[in-house]
Image 1 (cartoon, helix red, strand yellow):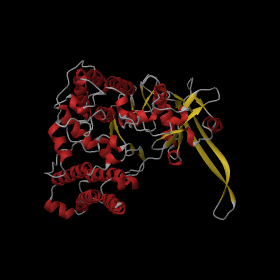
Image 2 (cartoon, rainbow, N blue to C red; image 1 turned 180 degrees about the vertical axis):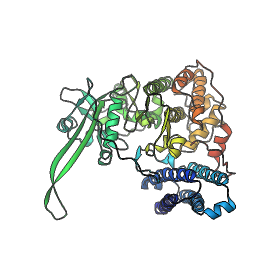
Image 3 (cartoon, rainbow, N blue to C red; image 1 turned 60 degrees about the horizontal axis):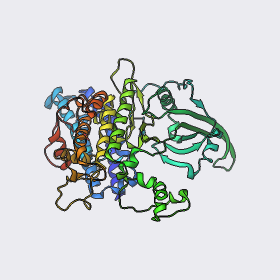
Image 4 (spheres, one colour; image 1 turned 135 degrees about the horizontal axis):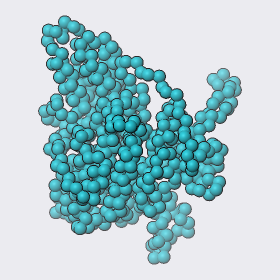
Length: 531
């Protein structure tokens, strides 16, 4: 069925190309047509990021239908752009204002179908699409910046990092990112570090690499992972060509070195992997009771041992709330420094030895100029699941993009405490939940209306904490409001979490619920609903 889905992707890409070419010769509504071309290009970039595994895990017939439905709207967009090429037809049937309104309506329709198809929320890894261009020519790339020199930040040799990671061995691998593989390393002086080895594709974006370095090394906050250094080497090697002759070639290596965080990430907690990750510690504690006996903690950590509680239940609400507040403090600091992270998500929130959250991975971060609150980029970088609607579809960037991603992360943190249906009381009335971000948002809206203990696992929280949980739910929903202006700033979020200020009313409760619960119904040409 994946092949069918990919044929739908191919059709969408083909229509997008036709729109791009047609925009070059429009005679009327040039601005609206160029806006449509940019809009369609961004939507297509997200669709193309769906890989084979994602296609297989999504329902085949539903995927095919959603892709075909989206293609219909793109065809309509192409028809409108084509009509803007014909001067006589425009004059006869449409005024410029009417055509602009119709183009806007089709854009809204495309956005609605993108959301209903749940495409963006199925791209879970960080992407970097930098060739999304409008019909106009783009400026040449700026010269590569050089990292500034700061005490405590150094340049490593590739030889040093190979030695620290046992030649980047599988045993030292601790994770992967959208463009990097992460290893645990021990430097010659004994310091334990995390080493990110970036892929070749990422190396093609050298400017972005050095921008990320220059942003991260100037940050200093207890909720931000501290960078320690980098390595960028070009090694001349001999390689066999297609004629079996040795020729000179280059091997590029770029690594980023930062503090090692021993307690994993928020993703481990949300997905219930925290307990399994540290099963060796629990085994050691149980050893005295003769429940489980292993002679080596290292060996114990390699077993998947079923236990009667879920991994997420190892972290109670008090600990989660402390983590949530720490993330908010870290983001507020970034925004005060005019830095927009652009990829806030659970896997980019690491936990130190005291379970304090640390924001990491500034590979796609943006620093605003002084006095600048928002900007627009043609590129599409970050994780589509956590992208705010205005950036995903139009490239509009502001601090509110991070606020949106924080809101989703907050809701996921609360949602992971919910009690499963098999463990719920027979008489319990639980809000329905469907996987994916739309299902999460619907669950949060329904659950907040009647927050009660039967919704959550009793090992995670108690009755006295329900009001805090309800308030955090509402803060999360405020953070994912449709309009950026309706989302709170991170400074306000911190005060809301502390119950220091009154929470404003949500603006779109019914609209979001109806969007996520049904894929049918009348179109709303003048309204876009958040993912």
